[in-house]
View (cartoon, rainbow, N blue to C red):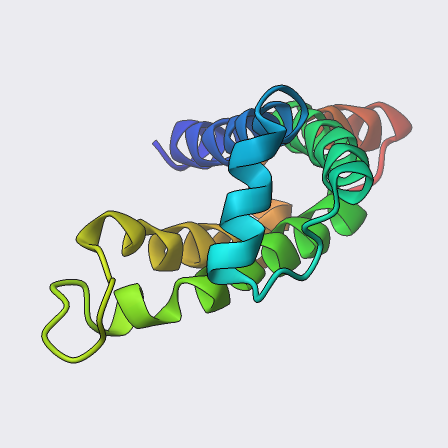
Length: 141
């Protein structure tokens, strides 16, 4: 059960990065609006968003297949926590009782950050990855 659960978590988190990266390439106006609305315009330049989108896609693929996880998982965590920070008011007040303009739809950003942390913390338990296959072929644990 643990093997399949970690694999599903890894694949779904990696695929989320691919989706977010593709969105930055094909829907740049949306990405600019997100940067302006949630991140004070930081990184809202079209060239930056496209470059970051490509990096996000590459990161997502690495996570999905479980390759270079010791580098990929910290990067995944940084992006996930950065996203959660950007929507922190919706995490703290999903119904808008205190903060104006919040939405319960952004609350899962906290869950995504927690999932990235769990993946990194359980990195040695996830055996259904390319990294694990390489390690087992070399005869090390």
